[in-house]
Length: 256
Ligand SMILES: [Zn+2]
Image 1: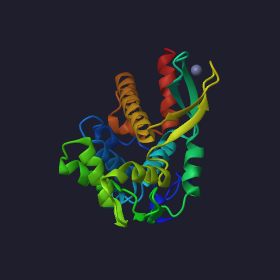
Image 2 (image 1 turned 45 degrees about the vertical axis):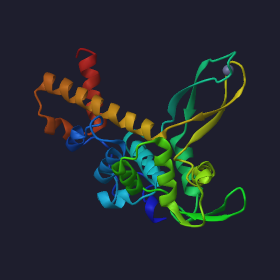
Image 3 (image 1 turned 180 degrees about the vertical axis):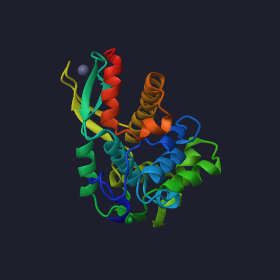
């Protein structure tokens, strides 16, 4: 399973946690999302190679990003929120998403990056390939004006074999979503207030990026607190293992 190296086994194979001095320079706001994801994976994942990560499918990139999050923060479930869609209810409720379960689901999938053979609703056969990071880069750079135009161009570029008409676009989008569940990921849950079933769309990539951005921010706070108190340099502080750093910070908070 080449493209998913590291998935489910985050500590080994050359992966590292996000949190070195160079990670403080990652600009989570200025860079567009595909570039940000590639930079993070090539910086912390294995191999440390931009081209490799651009060539991975969107699902594999998302799985790898979750892997990086797990390497950095452990496998604690992600606490998420959703709003009930029943008009009479509309309650805001919380639910947990297990990173481990998501990564396990990815490992069950096969083939990870092989072509998708399917049929359109009127039984025309169709062979597609899964979109990669490089496709995203290409689609962004083409500057397609309308959303429809963009979706049509994306779908066409993924067809390996088969006759495709303009009206097939929604069906093809459905086939792609089914083949790469992490791209349009959803969680089935039940509203705890009214009991209605809810399918909650979850943007895994956005969640992982937000958590890593928060990690960067808390790292800066840690450096600031320790440097202010002990006069250590950034380099010295980052060389202290995170667990020991946390103990110094607790001492500072306790007013020791
Ligand atoms: Zn409800």
